[in-house]
Image (cartoon, rainbow, N blue to C red; front, side, top):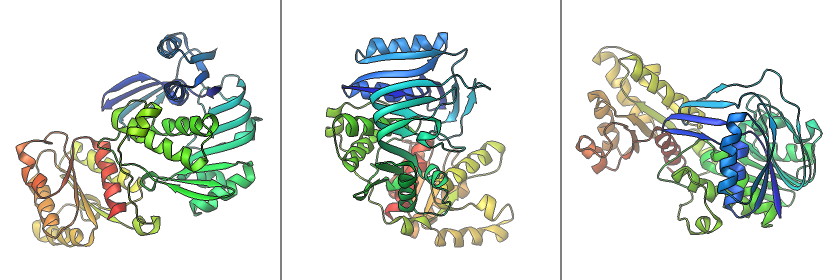
Length: 405
């Protein structure tokens, strides 16, 4: 049985952690499905140079074949870190003519350089559009059985329910787009899986490391293979996809079906979304020069985008003398639910804040690229602080800690 995949084949470069590969949503999904043992036909756009990279994958995976249309330059994504907003280059001002994809089983991703018009019996669709997600049938695509995979923001935009719950959004989208399955990814809360017969909540799985780039592509591909080819019920297919995505996030590798079954990642035991939504994180870290302020800004933005409230002394108190700021800092630590601390440089004020938080039994997550595993953090390690050398992992660990606290 063959699965057709249509989506972008893009260059990806990241500085922290180091990454320089050619995948894109479509390319990654095609490789995932081939890894699972299914025959795959990948429909995409390639430049002369990117076609050479794609040919390498067809040689590596005998079950992968391609149908391509030519473009001048392949789109490229450049990330400073894997949770950052990418710089995107070579997006054409005029989209290429749409690809025509006909098959029994099709996975379709939104693309930057063009589009794909699908005619399928079974289809899985990820719009991949943070600006304005486009309905599956807007370009004339057709499917007898349709599953949509969206993140929370895309779901609210597509449903035109800016304050709606995931359940409300899923029901409205399914009704308007005639979808049999709607999956809404919810970060640490896992994913809501809607079908006409009921709604399920699939957990996210905890990992020792988090590599973010391409994780959503993997979820879509593993779900599609499980639902369309292996015939699993949507909730079971989504759970397999969640476990496989955890493997990818931890290893940057694509799990075989056997590896998924033997993986030992523990589910994140969340309280309800309502209970975890109002958790307050105290953001500790120095802010005496531009580099320090930049990482404070990054951490604050990402923690807030993860659904947490953030108290930042830099933003919420500001600079001042000891008599101006110290008691305000202490009071804020007491009121917060947990602390995220940036320990690079071992700033004395930050070290004091960490110690005070632990003395009143507040959970502390520490990010330190420079000092992890060193003598310098022995006291933090010995008082049950969670210490991470990877920035993205530390952000995710803070969110996990918040929903489990």
